[in-house]
Each structure stands twice: as C-alpha cells, then as structure tokens.
Length: 90
Length: 332
Picture (cartoon, rainbow over the protein chains, first blue to last red):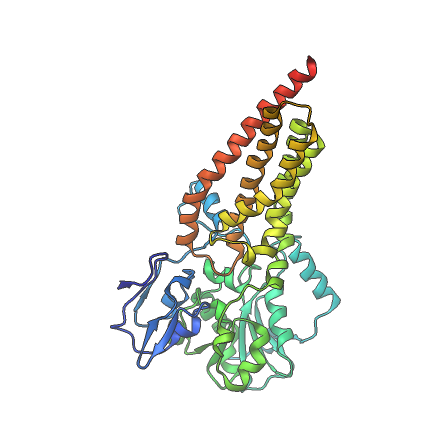
C-alpha cells in the first residue's frame, strides 16, 4: 500500500488492481482515473475519506481510514467519551 | 418462491402539496427523524419484468427525489430501511448497507418480479455497499448510477454516467437549503448567549452576539467558496472579524470624552469575543459539506480550537473587567 496524499489517509496499491473501474465510478471527487489496464490516482488531495472505493474494490487495492469529516461529531465523541464519532444529523 | 403482489406498494412521479410540506418541515428540522416511508418494494407506473430497479433510502426527501426524477420511466423502487436517514449519511453509518440490501432483495421477492439481475444504486450509497459482495450473496449485479437523481433519465439512455454526473458539487442552492437546519440547531444557544450578553453589556452586546451567531449559521454557508483561506475555522475567523468591526468601531467612537484606553478596551472586547463564535460555527459546518475529510477536520480542530478558546476567553475576561469598570465608574 502506498500513501498517495499528505493530507488524508488514502492508500493505493496498483499490484492487485485489475482495472475494473469501480473506484472511478464510486468516487464523488474524481480521485481515480483509468490508465489503460489499471486505475491510478489523479486527485489524491481531493479525497474526503468516505470509503466508497475501498468498500467496492473487490481486490483490496485501496485502503482508507473512512469516517465522518464533521467537527461537531468529533467534538460530541470527545465530550461523551466515545471512540468513534458518529454523525447525529440526517 | 411465491411472489406476494400485495407486498408491492404503488407510487407515482407526482409530488403532492403534502409531500412538499413534508420536505419543508424536514428542511426546518421539524420532527427530524420522522420523515420516513415504509421500507420495501414500490412499483412506479406499470413496470414489467424488464423494468429497471432503483434502490434508495426510506427518507422522504431521498425517495421523493428519486421518484419525481424518473419522468417517463416505469420501474421498481427498492427502499432500504435506513431509519429515515438519507442515502449518503446512512451509507456512512452502514444502514444503507450490504446486509440490508441483500435482506431486502430476499424478503421482497424481487427475484421473481424481474427477469434481469441488475440494481441501479445511487452513487452516494457506495460507502455502505460492497457491490461485489451483493453479487456474490444475492446474485444481483450493482450498477452505480449518477450522484443526483435528476441525472437518471440521461443515465438510463446509455447506462453510463458522465464524469460530471459522478462528481459532487456544493453549489449555492445546495448550501442555502442547509441554512434552516444550521440556524435551528443554534437557536437555543443563541437565546442563552444573547441573554448573557444583555446582562453584561445591554442591547448592543446582545445584538452583537446574535450577529456573530447568524453570521456563522446563515452567512457562512452562503459565502463559503468566496471566503479566503482553506480551513473553515480561518474562513470563520475572517467572517467573524468582518462582523465585529462595526461593533468595535462603534464602541470606540461612541463616547469620545472617555479615556482612550477605556474606549480601546471596550472595542477590544467585541473584536476578541465575536470572531471565535463565528469561527466555531464555521468549523461545525464541515459536517454539512460534501468534501471535508476526517483527517483534515481533525487536523483543523487541533490547529484552531485552542485559538478560538483563547481569543474568546480573553474577550470574555475583558468584557467582565470592562463591565466592572463601567459599573464602578457609574457609581462615582
């Protein structure tokens, strides 16, 4: 796994990638693109760590610590002593 | 397996006034968790065995956005039980998830209604669904449709989403519709803060605090892309400073016969207290946006919350000192 950005936790390993293109389809910020037979990272810093790519990669080529990018949720988690922040909105 | 036709509910593309009223209430945080429809299978129009199957959440805004967008399309809508939460947030929580989808495919008897084995999911459901898992377990292929339901008719023509359909933007209208929820969420703190400010500094101070809070909840979402700097907190500090300037100036200029240091101290209380209020609310808006990452927000919190606490704390300390001086001064 190779870290691709200094400002988020996205990691990508092109070795197991088969080029199915699922990561390109699910990413809402155009982080991935197809480079002939495999995917590659084009906008690494745009990743919002939603986890859709990791979830939908059948080959385990993507890793990201997904979670809510929400300050209110993290503050709430800190105040209530919960480890994992959960969003309270809908 | 026998298909139970009575399990299929009928729905239409038309949004009624009752639907629109329900959307309005949801946007204003009224009965926040109560905007639900029954999970299960719905028939839109008169779908046949080849009709497309769409999957969505049981939040009325999600369901209604989907069905009203499907102009001229007969199909099935499979509604997952996300407890009244929209697709994106439910996917994050896992309720719009692989298990729930597989279970709904089984319990609704979808397999016996359609000849094909394809489901069209909203792209924003992807953080909760492992498409290959669903295929393995339920033998249905997942197709991620566009981000916005409004793009579905165009998508269905080619079954290909353009890069534009796959991208999440956060245009003005999308930001503006969030304002009521933000505003309502701060209503109680706003009243309390205004009362405290009134006690400390009268109507003027109460008005200043209200202005700082409204700037954070109403102006900030509108101005988001145009405020300079990258971090939400620094954007909020800048907006809060702009709000504080007229108040600080007016305090400074109000009583020219007072000692300069008293007028400067009075102005400083506003300049220090108001910006961190707006900045804090701006930081909290990260959760409502479509692009902030957890790592980024955490880093921002560590960088800016101490600054907010210090400026606010110093401002409050000065306010109390200033109020005491005024009371003592008035007693002379």
